[in-house]
Length: 344
Image (cartoon, rainbow, N blue to C red; front, side, top):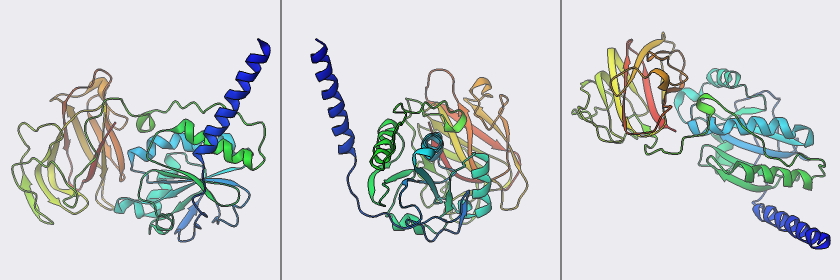
């Protein structure tokens, strides 16, 4: 019986190694990291200087909920495997115009406690070199500078960690802790809920969908809008005096409101004050009332909050069963810029 158990154990180990090996291939040499406007937490790195290291390149942007939910894994892997030869590089490639500002990126990296190297890729030079099209996107590079695996979007973290371990072992690392990291993230970095039926929705006219105010959205012109009375699921609308730009809508005079009929545990908005403008106060309601315990990390139980810098704000995190709900936010000061809505 002992011999049979031993044979079964060996067979299981071989099967596991074959499965891991099949996850990696050879996708060609890694592009270099030239073109970054600046580097945070590190002097500039290159494929030459990184030779002999296993490298995980993570394309992210600081107002993207998908990037934020992946961030705890990046930080955990960077810490767990740094002595074994792993280097995590967080290429910050912006989606919105305010994310191109190096000072905004520096503030976000500090606030999010990102300690590994971050090249500021505001011109998307590194993004184009990798022919990347996604946030987040992860590229796993071996010690010889070859891309061996890639993953787009959130999820499959255990598989990604197995790839890291495989490449480290190929490079001679021994004694690795083979257990997967255990993440207990809070706020916007927490994993998504399991019942999300509302898609990412943009506010600017270039990509706006499901706009339900009775008035047609005017491009680059100040206009007064009224809220839709009974928005259907995933419809939204403006109330008050707004100017719709290609990327964002700007409140011209206070008060101004937005409603969104959604289905999900969490609701986030990418918001910012006017450039170099004062903070903007807001109040949030869910189904016509303050949300109490269903408030997000950026608003209180009474629905009150303040916009001080351009970023993603978590406004709703429901604690009970998820149902269709009507979200309303009222801005008490002018100048707010509304970029998008995301859900979790």
